[in-house]
Image 1 (cartoon, rainbow, N blue to C red):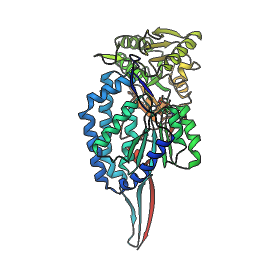
Image 2: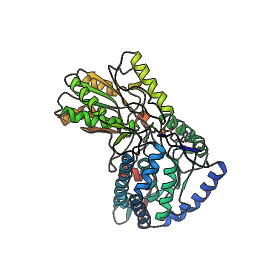
Image 3: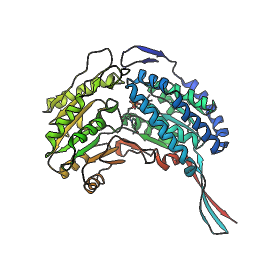
Image 4: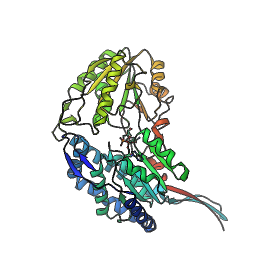
Length: 454
Ligand code: NAD
């Protein structure tokens, strides 16, 4: 398997993919390793993860360089991702005992009722490339803390990072047979679906997620899916500082080149502030630098996947053919590297692909609305349900709208944000199950009800 630097198109590594035999061997080892790992105390497991947390900091520069080389993410954004992953791990370290320990529910003297949280066993984590540290940590850290063993399949676009994660976990003290990496493309992922895991935890596209859900259903084990989104954002007419709102929301749309599951993907703006907002938005985006992701001050690096360039071109072509105005960008940039111009479309309609299908790139459609009712109707018009955002001076106005949208997260005056203490979940085509928060620990456990009569 070739690892390609998307900013230069150079092959930077050649890796051997796992096959059926190597995966079976790893699975057998993990089954044995899990039994002894689960017998360790939570304190011992916490100590190991604490060392991993420290190593991520010690080796940050090296890890950020590798992440940037294989994904095209600007170096500073790679550092930010590692810092963000450490913040999440810290939260998990602090809260693990609270959510994984036994709970006494009632004790009447002659009858005790309590719950214990047993590990699932060996879990399979098939992961995405856009934030390999963040989405990886959401799964393998609580899974390991709860006493599971993990077979981790990094995306083929973040395989070197997957190997670094394995190296650091081992250096931190995770036994060889408790965390292992499966290398390869979707074909390797497909082989994993035939295997006898005690849970499947997937982060990726709706298309693959739906396929995995169908393929493993008969196994009757947990299957959690963190999928894509078409996240809407509405700017009301009572916002005070339009330039600041435009800057913040543009960052929500374009950070990581728009390759975030919770990127702002559609913007609706009240007609009273529309012109001023669009002008400030365009000004802001034009001020950001594109270039090699290793250069200082670059905001737009390369896109990670070459095929996405054609998807973005197609969305622009279809929108313009149906009456949209191309305010900025709209084209693939000359290579080497997979670069797409930051793109802003106005006069869009909700029927266009750019307002319905996940773009996952530096492109945004902005639409004028006459009131909150129209904005709400348009925001609700999607197959996805990951996040939604309202910018307004009034919390009541924002919550009235957000509470009617079927999404896992609601943002008031912020966007493109994840917090370790809050449940991260998608609805409809955005997924099934919850990571982070107390539920993100419990997802890796089986509760046992204890009825103890004296
Ligand atoms: P993808 O679905 O193409 O691939 C994800 C993983 O699945 C990869 O490891 C891939 O090798 C594997 N895979 C592909 N085909 C498979 C098959 N048939 N069987 C088993 N495994 C298979 O997604 P991607 O391009 O890596 O990630 C981008 C998507 O992930 C976007 O839609 C994004 O919104 C979503 N995402 C969601 C979240 C979230 O928390 N909701 C977070 C990050 C990314």
